[in-house]
Image 1 (cartoon, rainbow, N blue to C red):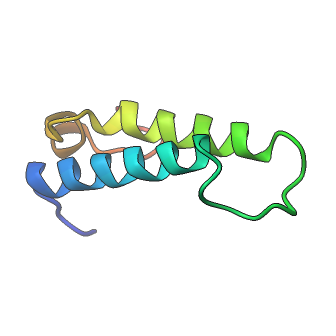
Image 2: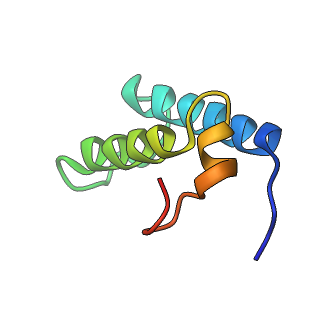
Length: 69
């Protein structure tokens, strides 16, 4: 298992936030996606961000797998 620091998790959180924002603005992804695919992806990214937390402390403490956070 890879050990990530709170700072690592925080960086991942903001990378996911940036990606979700790009998808919301229509600046990322394929135009060939099925209808609603962007919504599902954004929902998934938001769930991951919720599990990590903006400061990374929650993920560093509990992890982000099915049993964590």
